Image (cartoon, rainbow, N blue to C red; front, side, top):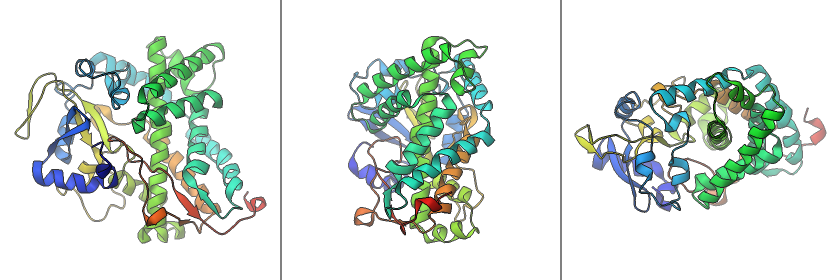
Length: 389
C-alpha cells in the first residue's frame, strides 16, 4: 500500500483484493510491516463494534517495529481514545467529546467567513490559483487554530509536522516537531486560558496530565487540519470535474452536502485507518487474524462494497468515513460545517472555476492511510478584489 501504483489508483487495488481475498486482504503498510485490510462493509461493522476482541492499543505490536519505520508515528501508541481501550478509552473520549460540545457552530461559521474572503481577494485578480496552498490549507489552518486557541506561530509548526507524518517522509522529525509545538501551547493555555478546545481539555474533570493534554491536541490537529483539508479539496475536485455536480451544485438542485457525502463514500480523506490489534489469534470470515498484528478498516473499500453499494448516493450517509460504534468521530457536525462554508464561500465569489490539472489528472500525495491531493490548480475569470465583499 506504500507503492506508487496504489496511490495512483487505490480503487482498482481494492477491486483486485476483493476478487482474490473476499472481505479481508493481507497487505504491507511499509516494507516488512504486514497488516490485514478489511474491505467488506459488514465485516468492518463487526470489527468496529467489537472493541473487546479488537482493541486499538498498539503497544505490543510496536515493540518489534524499528523507530525509523515511516508509518510508526501515525500508528504508535498515544494516550488518546483512538489508541486506547477500556477505561482509558472512556476517559479520553469523555474529555474530547466535552471539548467539541463547547464549540459554537454559529461562531465557527463566522470564523470561516472571516478568513475566507481575504484569502480569495488575495488571488481573485490573477485568474488562476492553487486552491490547496492559497485557499484550503490557510483557511483550514486558521479555523483550527481559532477553535483550539492556538497562536499562528505554534500552529504552523504543528501543520508542518503532520504533513511529514502523513506522507511518511521524515516522519520521526515531524512527530518531534508536533510534540514540541503543543508543549508550548499547553504552557500558554495554563497561563492564559480562553474559550477554546485547549482550555476545555485543560479544565475537564478527568484531569488530563501534561502528556495526555498534548496528545489530545495532537489528535485534534491531525483531524482538524490534515483530514479537513483533504475533505474540502476532494469535494472541490469532484464538483469541478464531474458534470453531475459541476452544474447542479452551482444551480442549487444538488447541495454541497450531497457532494461532500459522495466524497465521503468514494474518496474519504482518511481512506484506510481505524486500526485495531487482536489480543489473540481471531477467526473472522474463515480467516485467522494473527495476534497483535494491525487490522485496518478500509473506509474507501467498504463504502464501495458491492454488497451495500447503490447507484444513487444522494442523501445516503451510511458510509464509514466517520467511523462507527465507539470509534465514531465526535466532530462530524463541525467538520461538515467548516467544509460546506469553505466550499460555498469560494463558489459564491468565483462560480466559474475550471480545473487546470497537469495532464488532465490530479496528483495524489503518497501514503497508505489518506486520500490527499498534492495540489488543486484552477483557472477563472479575473475578478476585481474590491467586488469581493
